Amino acid sequence: DGGITQSPKYLFRKEGQNVTLSCEQNLNHDAMYWYRQDPGQGLRLIYYSQIVNDFQKGDIAEGYSVSREKKESFPLTVTSAQKNPTAFYLCASSIQGIIPHNEQFFGPGTRLTVL
Amino acid sequence: QKEVEQNSGPLSVPEGAIASLNCTYSDRGSQSFFWYRQYSGKSPELIMSIYSNGDKEDGRFTAQLNKASQYVSLLIRDSQPSDSATYLCAGLVYAGNMLTFGGGTRLMVKP
Image 1: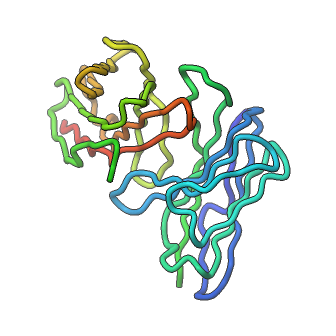
Image 2: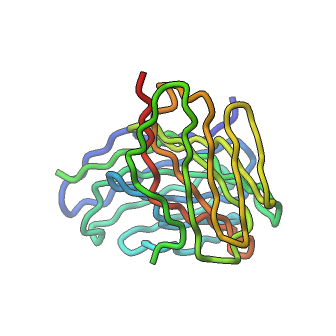
């Protein structure tokens, strides 16, 4: 089955800890994205990557870091510098290129809670 | 400042009625638009995309785009209780290849 997987589904973090959220896709998509969603809110872009070994900051990158060593994988680290990390984290991917569609498809999400 | 705006709702309609969801955008560089459905606690699911002025129909769903007035809408005919969800509108600017999402409209379809 083709798709996007995220793990873990639920994650609990203590104050001062760094945690890493996994995102893997087997859709052969070039572009991958990380979003954060707070209760009752839309999605805000944290980081995105259009090709391997390259990524750019989104609107709310402070306190987060990413890597893109493989086309299939785009892990997100939530560092202790992120002051309010409790949220629903969504990973997405899309075909790269200037085409009309460029739909983004989402993984199931990781719900992070700070204890 | 948000570039894509939606009424947060809730929008309540009776079963079998037409639900009309609206979205406005401020960036004239936005060229494609997407409607996602998100059930509580789940990730967004793409239901429609539109990039030309006019209407696009897919089953019970019709997306409408008016670039001159900078609005996008989604009509759901014969609404069902299973359509109850939050609907997210998103706009794509080709140059950046990034989506900008609205805050979502919560739809409630009552039996």
